[in-house]
View 1 (cartoon, rainbow, N blue to C red):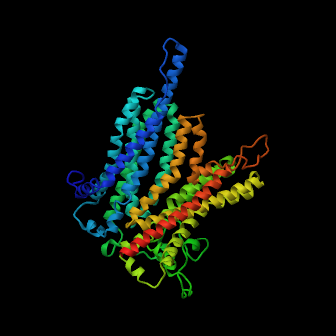
View 2 (cartoon, rainbow, N blue to C red; view 1 turned 90 degrees about the vertical axis):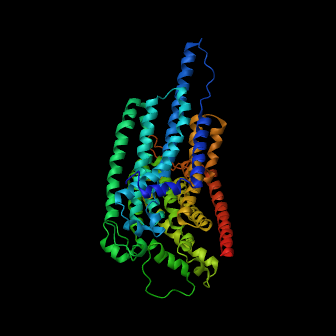
View 3 (cartoon, helix red, strand yellow; view 1 turned 120 degrees about the vertical axis):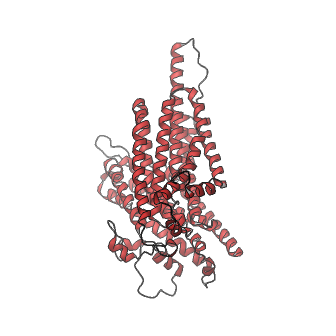
Length: 556
């Protein structure tokens, strides 16, 4: 009943594995890994065995390149698989609520554990196909040497265990929320720190082959299975004793009741700074020139399902920011750009959440025609929805910037004209990134018809624009160091705020007890080029949104 005769599993496999996106994703995944192996393949010339010293040196160099290739392959595949796990699992239960079948699923004779196991296996199957399909590529790397079959087994054991754990985390988040967007962003906030920590640990253990082999075959998989089992039990128990639901599985949430019963952080819209993104209930009539769409979105729509997701986002982001703030802003000022990179990464995750469903939610609720039938100008509708999502995501992001202002006031290293100019550049960079992510999600919402699809499209474009330049630069500098390409590849970061901020160091290391003025290594031309690109990008996204909406308005 849990696997072989599980109707939930059978239905998910039949529907999902036959979709076109599965085959397209498999092709793109294999093509990306193949390109990495092709361009990172060792270019060592034929070894002359008559010269023993030179031959030994060339052989060691070839083995080092082969090991770097294998590590790059595993780490790249690990990040790709772990980042795709929430996209397959975060909507496992929330999609039932969105399709209005959640209540029927709970009323079926299936046990909660059978439902969760079916959803989990169906979600992991997609990633399992991708991982197994990559085996022939790594087999081609084995004859190069530098890595043994046992290390391959340890890497794949850790990869499979991590995918299982991350998928279970996403399903657990999916059981707590009604919307896929909320479950997706909380899943990423929980998974990203863990995945990056494991990647750093695996890379650090590269010089300890036997220890990494032991941990990869025993400790990592065992820990992942144990935590997955605990989350599985908790999720099944939640389905067994589900909260009170009304018709079609909808949960009615009252913000005042939630604030009284919530444990931990509580959002109070009548106090600062909560009222910046959660304004209090209106007790008077709207002004004559007020935007009713904006008022509806910011006061009721965004927080209609409660503030659980918002509270978790704030708590997790602050918890992660505290150690980064201490190390990067106060203990070692030369790493200040990494804290700004964390703020940008946070906006990349949160920004699309509040704008990707701005238009698709109207179609899903079948209120799009009613909204268009009003006397409101269509630019007022679009502008109101964009500003509502932009306001919430921007305030959440700017809440993480107060340590930067505190450091600028307390740490003497930042007391210079160049330092203050660099800090101002950071603020401008974060602000334009907030606008870009909201505009991008809004454009995706105008093109797609479902919120989950708009969310995934927005995340995919953000990943390509913001993270790909960093990955390409890291690849080139590691496998083609000292070449002309490694010097020019920096300009690929013109499309990425992450690459731009990393090439703008905020402070230099202290020398002889005297603080060196920060900003002397700042790449201002790259910063200016990125700002220009962002302006063109937002103009293009606005035009694309208008064209897409005109097409929908004409058809409907």
